[in-house]
Image (tube, rainbow, N blue to C red; front, side, top):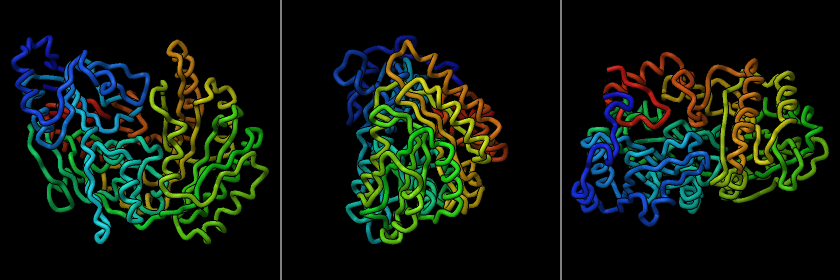
Length: 465
């Protein structure tokens, strides 16, 4: 069985109430069906464009529930989706008519401050994870939005403010426990099931459901230098050129992003978004040129808790809005690329839409290109276009604007893309996230661990057996 062949819903398979009730009584967590309390809230994910209705939702309370749900779905040929944080723009956490395996209540975490490690369950968000680790002055690279789940971000690679100092999230992954499509629990690390451990560090949820992540932690904070500096959009050319020169010599402790956006008071702006995680006094000197450039309309950079910097993105990406994204890594941030972004952003149809240039390099580029499944380590910048709006009747307009900007930037983009930024864009784009050699290796892993493509609602690597 591959693809969606023979994938059936309870209605089409004729599953009777007895089978469903047997499933219910075998769980420690809840089983939800349409009409049940919490069903509507549980099926909703961050991206308001996604409106899918699973026939069954298993709210897992632990690993036993995950195994039970996997075995039930396999036996009854049900399409399966897996929800951690539910924050992917593609909405793969929820399916139509099948079984949604919801991990969002599995939020256990144990921090070992002596070993500087944390063992965490997949229902945690980055805000929750950071809250626990920062109690000990520790952190690992996490997402830019606090409601992002740790599971999806880690499995796809994991960009974040600490990546230039500490590497990607997946670079700080020490081990995982995972439930496979045949209901078996496996552990994977550098010495045990090492092939699988390679694959889960960038290969997404293709090989099973990770029920436990073990991370390496770093001494970070509790105070860092971070915030937002807004310049009026007419200064975007000079600000972008300055940003390019400034980031050429950035130390690893500093990650700075550039964004074209609309300010909270409704004015189009270009913004610097720095986070410096080294000694504060030294950081003040390092970021001084950034703060002294031009005449900003607002400078909100200063010492703040690391958790506050991590929460900055939450105000710009709240749940429920309709979202459509396009992304690629950049070959260069040339003057022509800058001019193209400025011209395209001038027509932005929504005050909630933004264009971001994310600074990479540093520790990201010093991990061997074949050490993990994550695809791109040589790029210095990532381009991310995030369109967001409220009225579904306007979707075509916003989607077209996003595609037009992305197409206009093609001369400056590499073929590679960060897999966590992909929507539903087809097999070629998934292959581009990894490159031919890594994709071939990932297919071999898929053939070994999920030959029936049981886990297909993801940036799917299709088996060939």
